[in-house]
Length: 323
Image (cartoon, rainbow, N blue to C red; front, top):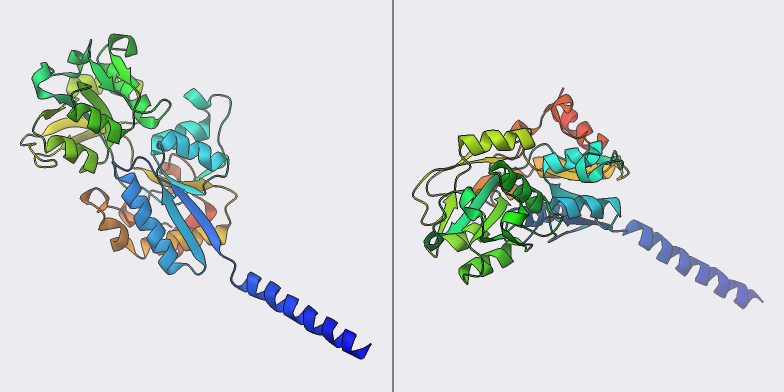
């Protein structure tokens, strides 16, 4: 009888130790949505995940390739991911229930950072196809991005600014890396790509010497501004890409954000935000496009297109970045 009790006590003690160890070593898993591997979002996401893993105890963060902003928002909604790189204007549309989100405002969306990097609409064409303007895409086969992606929305808007629709072209709904391969093989004559300056996919195309970057000059910009009031002017300076010895007038959206859900714990978001802004070189070293990431791109809350998460806001105030 005594032996049986002793065994029971030992077993209970072992069980307690296992339960305690499990609680003590609980791992927080974070999945971050980015975009296609040919753009800048993917390496930026990888860099941020690395910072979180190195600086937050028991954190296991991974960055995954996705179709971009629209899919990222939906995956955050379905809780398949916790954070994502996202176009600020797409987050704004989702938060306010505009366009494709009409009647379904995603009021739970929150910003984990201020601005991360700026994009630049990049429209490319084969040199030997007689394409000197976006208007010349009429009758051509053009890559426009995956169906429903932020890039595909860009394509629709840019074509509309030049009086074109998908009926005027043969649209190819492919991801950027596929567009690069198809253009290299002469299977498409043009592509409308929304990347941050210096993206590897564009560099890969431009190094062939067979491709030009088309401008979105003043007239096109003004027409596009009526369709998408949030865009601003950009210039791709000569030398941004191989064989680009000319400046390119174009435009872009407000700076991308890192977005999350309102229900992600405040302390966790605080730690994630703190570790990013206290290890800026780990992000800035990825590419020139993100060298501006930091306190200077942290806007006051009333200037943000979506609200800050309380954890992020707490850090910004504590660090003196915001009042």
